[in-house]
Image (cartoon, rainbow, N blue to C red; front, side):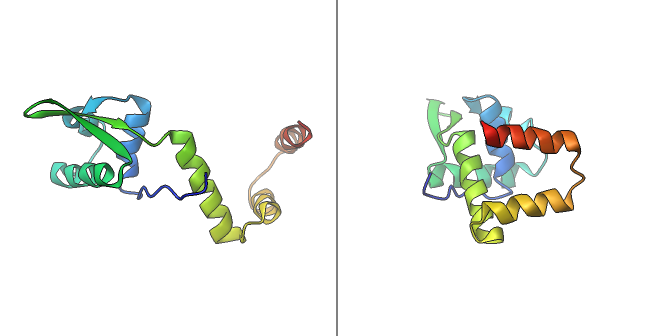
Length: 118
């Protein structure tokens, strides 16, 4: 994945709802998210305008929304961006930072070593 997928923090709850269950109307989406309905409608429109989600008209007053961007593609894009922004692209620096700052158990380290071996 070369291009950054532009989903803001405020837009992410909508995407999470659609990744969980695709093809939903706006009331179905908003039922799962806290916030002002007007603001949520604006965020939904932005996601459509960005081409991140698509909208299909069911009838003149009802629309169905679905994700175009796949969740794993978004995660990969965010991981790559984070790695480049914070650790200058160095996986080693990132791993060392997490290992030194978090309470990593011997079991956690063993799992990591097993993953590296595979």
